[in-house]
Image 1 (cartoon, rainbow, N blue to C red):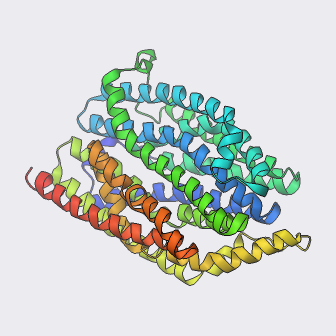
Image 2: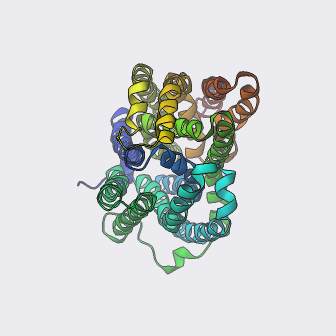
Length: 460
């Protein structure tokens, strides 16, 4: 694999560079999303639809702790990209060392708290009734591996900030393939049930960590640390925190949404309705992988060129990223509108030994999921502008607008909508909250981004 220099972020043609950055990111996200998707299909077919609902209850807790690593990674990687663009390698090294120390301190503390409050957290996130016991089994085992996940997510963003997207892609592929292989062995062959699903996920985290550690210890990385780089530096921590808080806030809002959605839907239709949302949640992770890939590819290019004061390249990066992501989002939209019933059917078992409860749950899920999916993804073609617009401010180190725009869709619009509309429209009120929030957030982000480009980049 050819080595890529960070300097190329400031010299290659934008279109070619964005493809070079976005394609590996998209492939990595695709494989990770496929992992979650196929993992859910395996669990649904080999364990049952209640097991899918149980995993959906656990995800916001484990993902939030893992997202601490991503927040530290993205916050620090913005500093690293700009530092490399400004030829300040020592600051890049000190930032990376602080990222590692901070990730370990915070995530291990969170895991201890998560295990201590296990019996109250699971019901709070919708793990009630028949969902509680399988959710607890999955939660406890997976939580042990979450610090490794956090280190992987942090390290992956740093690899991309160095201008080495192919290595970042491999780091995302390895745990996904490992998890699916372990799923087959532990669930299908050994019949370990939820224990097998949980251990497969945790082993996937370990494999990812092993590869990321190999990358930074080998000659592939330009960031070679020594002991002095791990000592916490207050100014760097403040900058990591202010920028990483954007990502952390977004994931915190996602966790709150899972909590609200699981409880609201449980009240509307019990465990089966939670299973409907679990399937849609998997598709939200999977279907938009190319848009998220373009967004991930956009970040280091925009950050590097902003740090190098190449503002024309920054503008071109914004417009090119929005164009590419919008085209891909439209393709995704068409597929989801045509095949929602077929997608829902993939997650449901047709084994002859299903109980009456499982058969009733499957029938409910198959009836309700297609219409819900169409509503949830109704505004997909326009969301690229909102995602790229929010990512731009994070890439250039403007934490406050990045935070506000990142929280716009899910925090400021979606949460109030799902608290109000279901009271008037029932189940439909839940699902139409998605496109309404998407449209409102995209309008606001577009106006704000246009103002920023005119006042900052056009006048530079």
